[in-house]
Image (cartoon, rainbow, N blue to C red; front, side, top):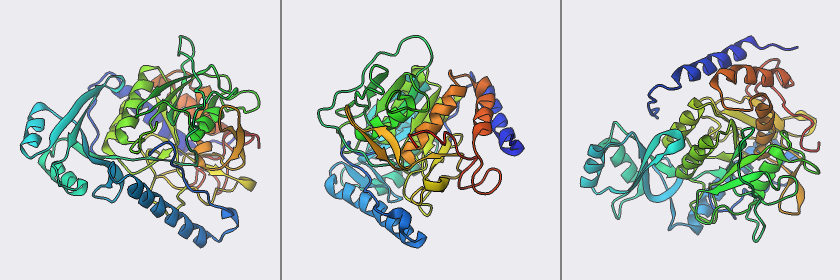
Length: 423
């Protein structure tokens, strides 16, 4: 039996710290999704390309993806001060009081709304930027104007794998009832495939949501599927938050934060997020609040390659970052990176539901993350901070060591659920 003392000790210290903060006043920490038809372009024959060529291809895909988004939806989306796509004309802030709102209004920043996310006890204010001012310029000004608040753009997050809308597909439906806590999913909507039908409650956090999507359905089936498509937590119930719907600016930071609040209220112990985007203060705050309520979050590192910037929310503190492996249990060439990688799981030739009546072999780190989340949920069935250390230790102990001996930056603690996904 392999025992990695340092990583396990770190996990225990993290869990102890979380438990100690529960019930205390939580400070917002100082300091990640587009429409349902948008998907990451496929990368044919990527395994056969030289590593440098792969890196160049992935970098161009990322550039083209953002350029297409801006070209097609310039009325809804623009770049922030760091040239990251975000909702046009909107800034979001936490740690806001009435005096700050009045000060912002004097400088032309109109308050759109001020909402408290009940499940996280997190207040969020959205401001419209002054007319004729770019988002980048307005962002710099409001940050300087409100130094005690946490101000950021409402960033757009992309799915970390291909998958478009399923027009006319029936949604998987049920009502979350008493019993074992459901698993959580933040993605697109989930179609009523037989592998998941009758066990998914869905809520929308974007215009036109919930609506079935290929990506959301695939991830859901790899979590709770049973029968022809078997997930890593077969038969479990699922609370699925659709943050895309039909909104061109869907998958934004505000939608993710509100989705986390609903999942926390629903008693979710483990949530999967197969979305990637930049570091964002609102997302970081929402993730932290959910964790302090005992929720464990598993996120994909994305498919923009190892040379891409660190992906969020996989890089958020305390989130379990998952990479994908293919043939020979080698890391996918397109696998992105996080500030650290915790686990690996199958991410190529994985059998998943892709519609109400269809299955397919899928590829990407999106489809590795739910395999890890489902196994984690087997050890952590209900949110309880005093059980985190034991649950994570159990997952570490079942992981198969890959790469350099012990934990490494490519595979983390190793491969989880190596025979899952119909491999």
